[in-house]
Length: 342
Ligand SMILES: [Zn+2]
View 1 (cartoon, rainbow, N blue to C red):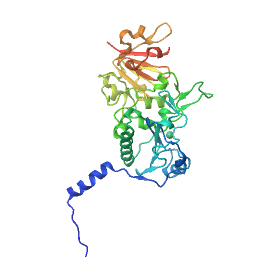
View 2: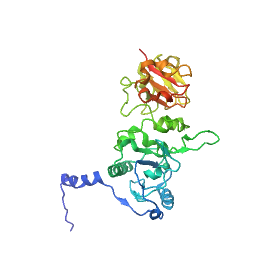
View 3: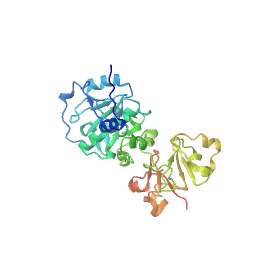
View 4: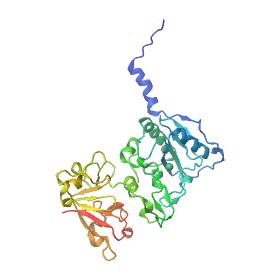
């Protein structure tokens, strides 16, 4: 006869909850044979997130063989150690951030089994959040130094781009999104690409740039009246009418399409509005101030409001930055300026 042991529900919960909240166990099944020959890192400044772009079964083999990550989180949320966290793993390749190159020497690399344009699973969110908490505490890494591989990778000049350029990889792109970051316990993200801003690189992939550095700030949501941050079409069911309401076709509603076209609301037909591409950015209550030329600089167009947070610069490479982040010396000719309509 089997004796039933009755455990009160509240007691079970009390026993399980603390474990669930901190559960982070590692598997050493896939430690790299390269591990022992790798140097120790002298500095740990960044955590860089990757997507494997393949199933974990095949990704693990490749990463292990070459020592190309510190951790891999598989589809079920299991965390595998591949290279010791204090040693160098070769996960970033050609990379740069804020003027520093070869980020393998100053970063930890985490691979998440999945694809740059798909959601990761709940178990993966849970494991990644716990791993980030642990590593950020050990190395004292602030939110905005948790980066994606796509943020830091750059390409050398080639037949299409005569300069060093961003856009070599889309790896880990979704980890730049505010909603994804919030689930990972990250409140802040980098607001712009410091190397493009400084002129060290150019943006070669406008879709990637718009995803990594969307102009809407964390939590800005639909509060376009507070701060004037543009909304992005195609996210969370955002359509022109959902975003702009009855103002969707007014002259003070501006649409900035990928490809660089700037469209004023009153020139849009209903059909046009329905077919505006995803990632189109929208400003409500704005006017086009003008275009920067050699003779007509930003200050000539926007006057004392040139560096205001609700003045926007649309660079020719489609980067959008707000006035408070603009560097007067780095506003190229051809940049269009959007200002609040009176
Ligand atoms: Zn990667």
